[in-house]
Length: 180
Image (cartoon, rainbow, N blue to C red; front, side):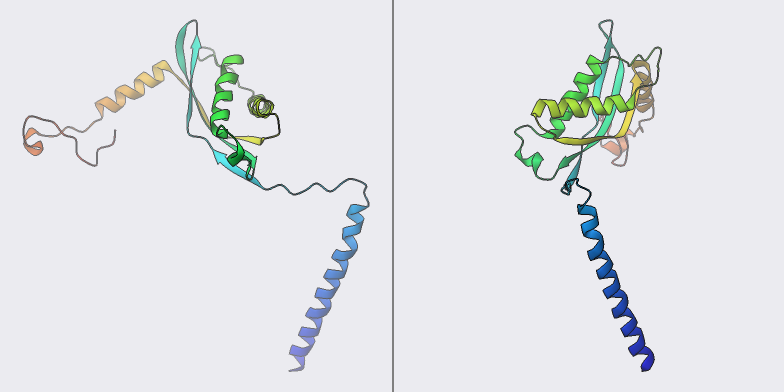
């Protein structure tokens, strides 16, 4: 019984000591002279896959496929007249056409940081306030026309065939578990 009483007394002393220490540290932070920044709750929203055609010499050379996420202050998205993911999609198109670093014939590294910062700053400038805090890249792919054509041909040739007898006549019907 004495062990339980001593353990309880020790826990009370440790809790009081921790509370006293925390109370002493709070003024030390406030004395730095810098105003305390308020904690801002951010929401993370994702876009659908954005497909930007890469046009060079008046012809589509390929596509940039991007899936992005962005952080925005909680509640600000609902106040906008235009959905923020639509603004982000528009700025990705604007950035891709205004900064044509994507040459699929002679690929070179893309400055991802410049892409993220450029899109974020463009959206914030457009709405007149700091709407987007960060643009996050979930996926970026560059596909040439040839790669897209090869993938389409592979999909067409891998479709399962069915018998006329199974489909009930002259119409061919794929099985329900077929993947296209």
